[in-house]
Image (cartoon, rainbow, N blue to C red; front, side):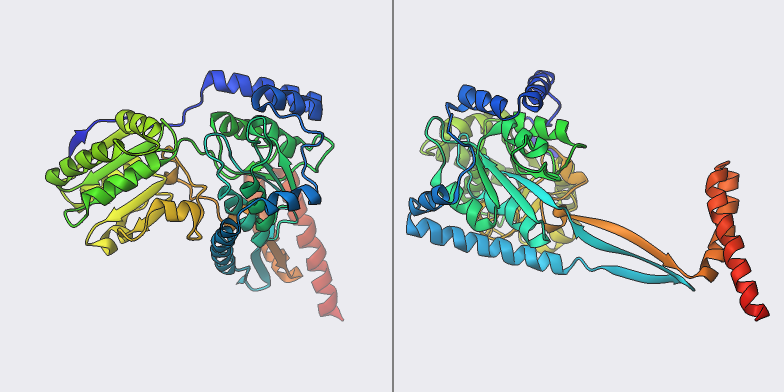
Amino acid sequence: MKIFKKGGHRLFEKDEETAKVVTEMLITLEKGKMDAVREFSRKFDSWNPGNFELNNKQIAQAIAEVPPQAIKDTDFCQENVRKFAKAQLKTMKPLSIKIRKGVVLGHKHIPVNSAGSYIPGGRYPMFGSAQMSIIPARVAGVKQIIACTPPVKGKGYYPATVNAMKKAGADRIFIVGGVPALALMAFGMNVVQPVDILCGAGNKYVAEAKRQLYGRCGIDLLAGPTEILVIADDSADPALVACDLLGQAEHDPNSGICLVTLNEKFAAETVREVEEQLRTLPTREIAAVSWANNGIVYIADNKDEAIKISDDYAPEHLELHVKDKKYYFNNLSNYGSLFIGEETTVAYGDKTIGTNHILPTSRSARYTGGVWVGKFLKTCTFQEMTKEASIETGEVTERQCNLENMLAHGITARVRVDRYSKSRSKKVIK
């Protein structure tokens, strides 16, 4: 392996200063409730409406402001997300198995009762994120979905975001951003019922708030700056690979950009293409910083080494620009979402195609996938047995408990053995 271009691989470490700010905000918000929400909204977003929640009339007005083509395109995207979520749900079957004579074990999938969806704004009004967190929750059977999104600073809602939130299935829509939005959904603040799970991406303060609120409610995952890794062999087009790398670089100055190739000539051509395309890229002020600081290019000796490099990086988005797509597909193990072949690109997954764009970053793809319908379902086990089976199981259980000196546990087993043994003896006497 050779490093052709050095760069940083950001790890989303706990930032003590950010953690302190968020802790203080959450304490203030829990005590001050909506008065504190209003104060922070004025301070950070110059936004002080009569009511942070949109009523039906305001929602209708917002949707009326969205161009017809944008509504049609959003419907197209949401239909894909909904179809895929429904297909995922069908794979989640209940289980019931007779493990021994008289003993039935199983599980069932139960949706959480309420979910809080955060749709980020800030530099980009990412209204496409609405379908990614709201639709899977709706398909899973969540009864109540609260959705929050930041205002356009000093102006109010972004119409396309309101349209996406409503069409995706949000029950209540609030125009409030950042930590106050998460606090509103998690604490309830006498405005909504506190949610069971928080879902959605955001800046470092949003991510830290989710970290601190975990336990009071569930969270989908902790997402840091976005990232892309491309594996390319000599069959790939350097200009297209460079284009896709820059597509993610525009997100954030801390975006992670990585290329793994098997050919030094291809590496050099791609780097030249990146520099050339940056000259005219409309978002080059951000993308250039990301590429300069975090862009890294590896030259692998063979396919297996390329896979090893990629799995160690564990990217949020992984693109394959290679001839032997099947080999990579069968052997790669750490990624948030995989884009197979030059025909697919991260932007399709982010916006349109139907897979989810809320994905693990900062190497967390080693142990989790992204948001999907299963994030909103609890897999709960159950057990049932006959009296005869309880006698057999109880005798073993009592001995196990006594070995652990958990005598009260053992007694719960013994009383059943005695009770059902007597019952069985009476039946035999009759």
